[in-house]
Amino acid sequence: MRRAVFSVIVILAVGGLGAFYLFSDRAASPTADQGPDAPPRLVFYTSFGATTPQIPFWGAVKAGWPGGAGLETRLWKDLDDLRGVIMAGRGDIWLGHSEGLAQAALRGAPVCFLAVTGWRKFYFLSADPAAVDLASLATLSQAQNSPLMVTPPDSPAMAILDDVAARGGPRFVTAPHAPRQLALLALRGQARHILAPEPLVSLLLTKAPGLRVVASLEDEHAKLTGGPARLPIAGLAMHGELARRRPELARQLLAAMERVAADLADDPAAGLALLPPEVAGELGPDVLRLSLSRDMIMTRPTAQVRQEVLAYLRLVMSPADRQRLDQLPEGFWGPPAP
Image 1 (cartoon, rainbow, N blue to C red):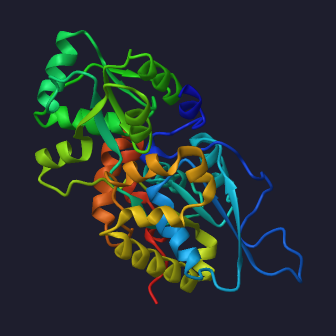
Image 2 (image 1 turned 90 degrees about the vertical axis):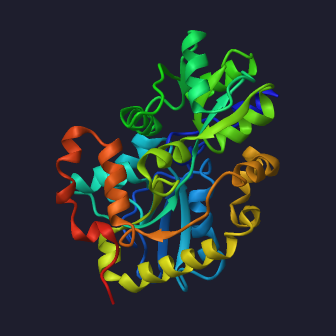
């Protein structure tokens, strides 16, 4: 049982984005390191620990995108690695978290944030049957001197949780844990109250007895803001130079991902067939299916949800970066209009 949990080496904060191996570390700017007679090739940096945020992309690929160009997949090791990849301009398409993409763009990286594809990820779990809602969970956590264990330590959920408290919601004492550490504690029955992202949530529910879902962080935040029960957590970005030179390629990808997400809206489990086999091989189809029952498959061009993204970034970014959000280049918000 423990081996099944630890086979998912890292499940990272943003929408459950994680990584367990790296295909190649060759530098690759758009269409770089190709001979004059080689077919065009695009390099996609992703994580096979991410589930829902990349389903629309793989659906677009299955539908024929990017046409005559080949596609090479490389995996980033962790979020620091992804930031380094983007800052160096390596790769053509990146799956990443919204905050990191914006940080890179503010520091001069060539980022064109095409679409938000990760919207609902964070759930409160408890092993206490008396925890029936967020208020009772907070009361029990305080009375039992049992902090809310949040994973991973740099989770954007922490900022959202602070905003919930600032708006009159429950306050928690939190204890950050690495995913692997928290999984071990849960297996031992030593993790009573947890805030974690999918698909780690589903993995814990299937492996740690007594844990159950109490509430969704996105739902609780929406109750206090009056907005939709979603957050623009993660998505797909394209190298800015490629988007500038080939805007039709970006627009075709956007259109294809929107179609895939719309087709899966009523049957998200069908998205399992679109994921690379490595994902199902590590997490297992049962865990993925359970995860998708709580997740949201939706693609929105970033230009259409610009204000929603900015509101989210104001919550999760550092104060210094928040003050610079108006400096994000216009090219960050998608490809040029036709």
